[in-house]
Length: 373
Image (cartoon, one colour):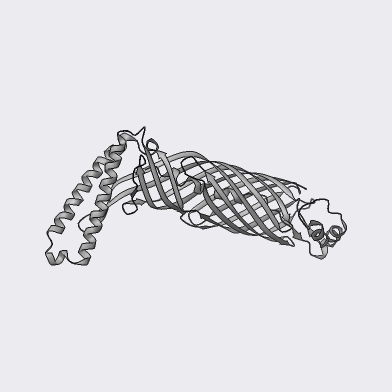
């Protein structure tokens, strides 16, 4: 079943971690005394950041106060889906959480984003992000039902692959501090991702701490930075939407699965009925047997109703639609990141960062140009 568009908004949170790694640095050390003294007497020529002149006079080296970045990003991540409710043609929704189980499902995405930023304060950068992405989603789901021994088995499986586009807008800030080439940055942002199948844009929050070191090269203002850090994402779990049935089911393939599902539901219902009717009155009054019987009947009825609705909708697949609601989340909230940046001069930077471990892999690269405001 193609639940891919249901969770697409989850994809784009990573694009907001991509910018040139610059920071306000406290100049220390005897060999840097001449630079420190020159900063104290030089006239700071820009309006931003606020208190930039005072900070520079205290021996801090400031980056240019404004920048524009263009970034490319790719990622592959496992997701977890639960609390699924599905309805057809604006009819009542079925709660399928008991009988539908999502197996390993993953999302791959590539995006291009633009990120303007300014240093509002000497140690606080604020930014916006505008991104366009192409995504590919692989979802594996199955319908499971119990038998008379309360053993659950899969009666139908749905595997899907879908590609589509999405647009994202976000706002963020990065408090930083640097001393003698070492630095700490705490990047955080909020974002809204919009795709046509969702009732409203999905909300996400990202936190990315980084600890790094910058190594100066012989030419003035040219350096290489390296860092390690973490990446944590929180996604708004509630998702509601509406998609055409033709994007979810192919009639010929699905009809065969539905027919087979009807047979398996009927067989298991017969097993459950025979087991229950074979119990003595005392056994039927046993709370454990009552719970087992009720669970089996409820699951079998839910599966039967769902299959019946799909069967009816397949006759008008081109004009039918599916309404859905679910909870979604990344399988792992945290992953590890390493990165590097080559600063050609104070205007131009090139960046590469990789994330791995846990269930998420990501690669991103960016080009940034900075200037004074």
